[in-house]
Length: 442
Image (cartoon, rainbow, N blue to C red; front, top):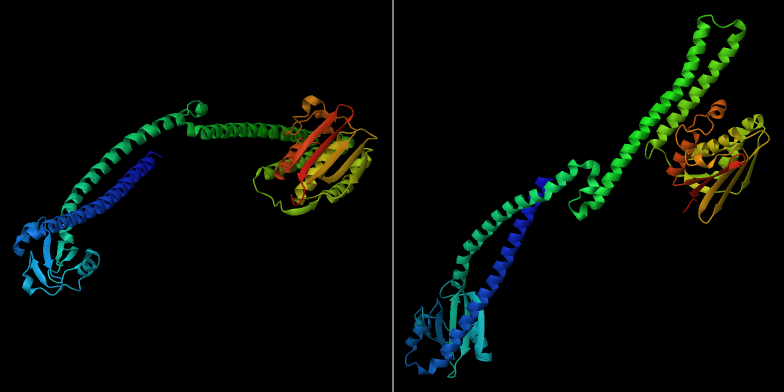
């Protein structure tokens, strides 16, 4: 992190320096060029003011200062005087752009390669009172000579600034990173030592993530302990019964009874392992396709058919009402949800009781309510019934074959379908479990 910040600060410093240098050179170049042009025009104007005092054209030579070239041209374009060349050997200048412009407007200027000198030259011409034209010229190379001498100085200043930027970047990076490193060392109380305001959301999120991680680890530890306990109980029973039979400690007439107990405990193990595997599968993110179109009413009807024998054995009446409620989800998982809720409603009911299922849609939501008039759940336990292996009545749960994982599976399935579940219950009067989903298309 420190190296990245340092390198980026150095890069920013160098880029800033380069941009500043380029802008400075460009502005300086433009200002210098304008100044030189202004000086040439001033020189030409000064000459025109004293032109009438000259007795000899050769006196114009005194105006050829600062590398400027002076040329006097007659009205018909004949060169009368040139400060650098023999006037008589020079071509007629009547067709030169600056001369044409001066004859028309009083002054003219142009930049081009000089046929006489072979250099790129800037020209400024002015019409004199007697019809002659005075022209001042300066080579472009000479125009920028002083300016070009400043470029090495600007380059050295740029290099000096770059070196200072690198040193400052290194120093500032250490000052910036040091409190962050200190914050990282105090991860347990990271939100208390935040060095920069901008880091507060990050610190809070990191702390929450750490808490979630710790909580998850704790839940896994508890789950592992609970699984071990739940598996140990039936395995101990199976091992004990089998050992008694193996050692001839059971009468022949009781062997069938003991075999039945072994079979019962084995079935309990199978159901328990099945529920554990379902929970493990549900814990995996994006493990199931949730894009099927599912009619909850049809699933509820199918669940009643599957549980009809259990309901008859327990002397429980099952009813369904409502209408079609269609959602997007996983049909197998949603069938498991309805089955577990209905199965619990039968298990924890009383002879002659009922289980009523109501499926309906309203205001873009799909509802399924499962109501029974069984033993109910006391208020103190209603928040905990969705915990893994939690049982309100442990003896009754084990009697009826409950694993303590059914409602945990229900909650997981509801959450994976962006649904919610609500419990209303009174001891001795029954329970209503209500699950709400977004209807298909919402």
